[in-house]
Image (cartoon, rainbow, N blue to C red; front, side, top):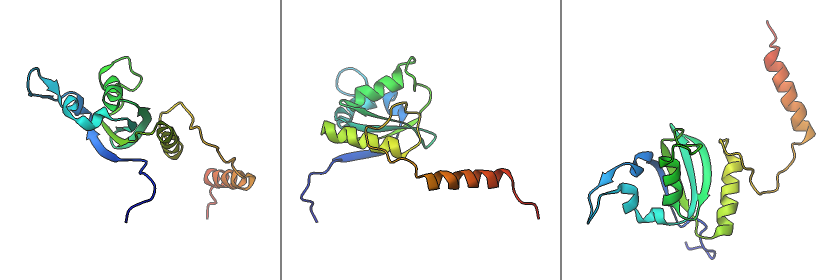
Amino acid sequence: MTSKFPAVVSSYARMWPREVFDRVVKGEGRQRTLAQHLDILKKSGIYILYRDGVPYYIGKATKMRSRLWQHAWNPRSRHYNLWNFFSFFVVEDPDQRDELEGILIAAMPTANSSRPRLPRERLDPRITAMLRDLRKSHANPIIH
């Protein structure tokens, strides 16, 4: 079944090792890293950096390879030593890229300092009261 609407994500890669930016492969001419041979990394989209399988950071890039390269090779990068796998989603449309990044940041607890540009629902006072009651009951268990 085909959709009437164009896909937001045209392709994706899941849990690739950071080492694709380190592995040297022989090609025509000079030696290059494996990442330099992967055409899909020339595209734009959203990426997720993982630390031992746990989402650590979410970002967007117009040129995936160069943005991930900065995280992998620049020791001054805030995230340089803190990730070992990455996933990415190819999203060509910049507006959709912004929206998807915001959704992912809002959905996953990560080290992102930015806030998604999405309207956020305030916590209902009944939920606040419930959370307070739960915290109190955990701190003051009834001993039988």
